[in-house]
Amino acid sequence: MIEYRTVFHPEAQAELRKIPRDVALRILAKLPELETDPLGFNTTALASQPERRRLRVGDYRVVYTIDNGELVVWIVHVGHRSTVYGS
Image 1 (cartoon, rainbow, N blue to C red):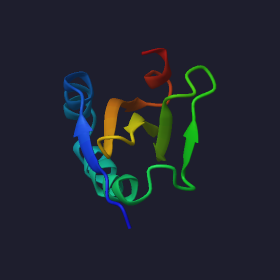
Image 2 (tube, one colour; image 1 turned 90 degrees about the horizontal axis):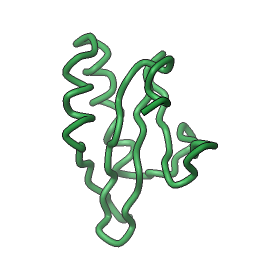
Image 3 (tube, one colour; image 1 turned 135 degrees about the horizontal axis):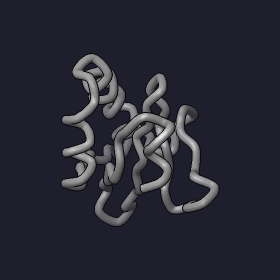
């Protein structure tokens, strides 16, 4: 099976540092799922930006894009569901 690698955009990395540590650890624990199957059952394309997808982790969301050529999952935003989609 093809394995992707996860790369954070600088903004997403900064956003991850701002959220509570326990939530950040739960998010980081979910990333191997994206590396195995970035189109997995727990992800959805964003209606406003179909090239972006989101992963739900409790009340927080990980917004990402997939580069199939380079086999990279780019994490573009991480945040609470009430604020992450406005980015």
